[in-house]
Length: 132
Image (cartoon, rainbow, N blue to C red; front, side, top):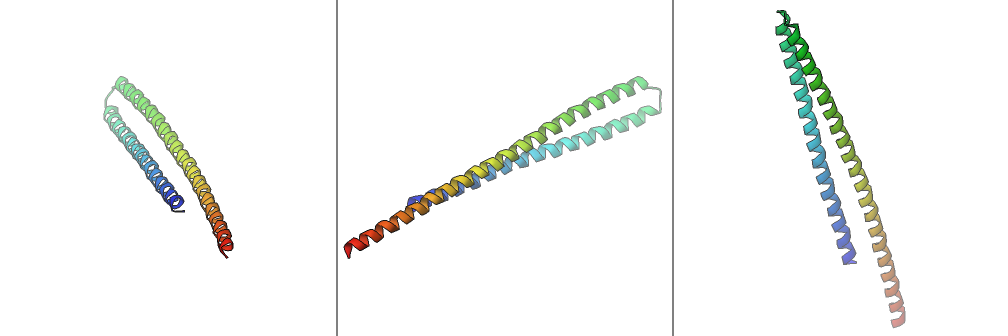
């Protein structure tokens, strides 16, 4: 009984450790996502500022190049955002699956523990009857 109790405690500790590890990964992905969004906004702001300064003169070639650079950077950032969202979704899915697996293992361990306790009680009852 003590061994099974120790095993249940070990499984619970393992579940908590897994949850903490996966939550840490999710936080890291979220921070990357936030930094990327901020970087996108900063680039858009900078591009707009440059466009405004070029509009005063006849620098249409530079303006077109700047717009192309901006559009390319925006496309790259959108791809990165999609990649980070997919990673976040995968990490959440993995967490949910791992939690379900660990909960199932915990239930199975409890079932074995209670079965062992019932068998021990029956054995003790038989031995008590035999002694009487």
